[in-house]
Length: 479
Ligand SMILES: [Cu+2]
Image (cartoon, rainbow, N blue to C red; front, side, top):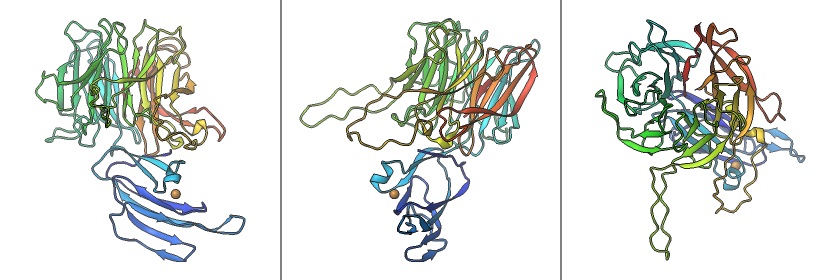
């Protein structure tokens, strides 16, 4: 299932050139479209721009020679504006046997600007600062100083927590600071400029928990905006908290909890988190976790299905499942069973044209600073398999396979990762300190399939987006 990723408020024209020996009624969810061109070579009928507000139009069959080589393809061109809604939906052929055999595409409308955050560690006399960039061209957007006077590191994530279709910034304090979370609006509100307005500022854990707070944002609770998600730092039992999307702008007010869970039980090494649509079988965004340094690095994937069992006729009432507890849908060990150095996590549609769900990226905080990419399935694993299973077959058995591995800083540990979306997928941001240890930088990569038979991806360096003096890598956040 390939991916198309238009930006919110943009207009795209998609042209279907049909060489297949059948016609295909193309149905697009969410946004209606306008037929711009239609040509049926069998009848010779050619029409131009038609009325707006269609959600299904036929891509006509080609004319063919008796050996099925195409004389003239059928043509359908449609034009759409992507209004109001950011997020996922599908476009597919409306003939059931066609859509079930792969004539289906994901459309993921992304914000107009894919802002990402580079959190530059503080230094004596200089507080930690978060620099924001536009992922399309890496143009500098804004600087935020979340904790004035704090000279340590902070954690960052991007997400739309106020539901306006614009990416907001979420910051979690680092080691040595009270466990605070601050969220800034990506929109310019009341003349305050982008990232100038605080949407929330609160303490996420007990004051004594000063190991840092990891942060993420994703739509978990079934509402329309993203939930703020935090992971505990080292020193306290591992915990992930998902806050309800209703926030109070009054400083200090802790949002209501939607869910809290312990991904690694009583382990006290801290929890790294990332979020994303990494598993088709759930149809929802997952929370991905890794324990901190000192514990075996096992990545776990959690999803909140939000579904209650339907009571069946004749079987009486069934016990409703709790919707505020996640299901652990997958677990894997990215760096071997002996690695205990901790990991930075991200998710994103690296090489999105190959389809599948978002990839999980894990990088080593220790060891050789290796970055590995995992996928739950894409064109790298071959074409879509035919639907020969029973329609009642709904088992969860997602598996993540390593599809790329590289060492962007030539063996230097402490690598941090994030992704930033593009109109075709996502690029990877990698932060680290080069050998020698005096310069820290953030690099941007895209991933390509070297040839049509390859089952793994290759990293291609696009450029350096930030660098500075220092021995600590910048923390990264993107979406
Ligand atoms: Cu079809």
